Length: 334
Image (cartoon, rainbow, N blue to C red; front, side):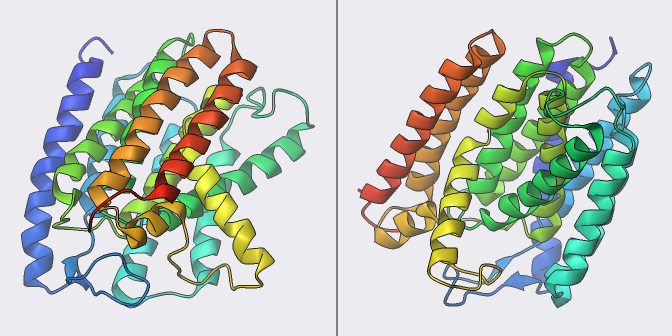
């Protein structure tokens, strides 16, 4: 792996995504593939949708190169890349024509099953607290939940790029500190670079949206990396890094369930969406989340250094502060 340094992996992904997304903006506009505003949207103008094609293409290429240069390749990486490719294809069809929930969930289940089928038997996400079969089943359910969580939370300019970049960067730092996981750390860093390259085009006002073709496979890849970190013993960092997304999505889901709403229907009830509705700009909202995520990266490192419970407690407080800041919505316009 001496030919592929962390800096090179990061810069390649960032530059390639930056270039390819710019090409996509023009191509999608020419073909009039737009995300049209509706009553549940947080944008006002028709905007090209499908930027995830560039992000996923670059991440898959970077991860494949890492696998080819590794001796041996990280366990399960090739099947996971195949699963991500499957989800990207299905999700692009969904972006273009729309699909019911059942085939989307079936594709996600197949991709998750494919990834779990190649996990070494000694890699237990829940650290041996559950029998292997139960460990796999629960990990699979959490993985599918994270895929959909990541997709649901992609609702304003810049949020998915910032979240993916922070989770990827945090995982790189954590995995570099674990013996034998440097290659997975490079995959995480390449994902962060691709997310930042896309963010240039997706920052408010967004010139292109990620689309399901990006958010679904990106959530799938990040979910796999988080589960891999947990199986390697870094269970607390794996929980801390996506904690804002988990908290906002889960609390919103519980509130909707208690009100008897159809939880699979589109809505604008997440904390970050309510902040925008109350007056914060997309950029202000995402900056608040980014500051919280940077703090979570530091706390994930603290957890990996031997203080998991303390770091988790402080992380919960950080997320509460982020949610409180979004609730206060001090912005002056969108």
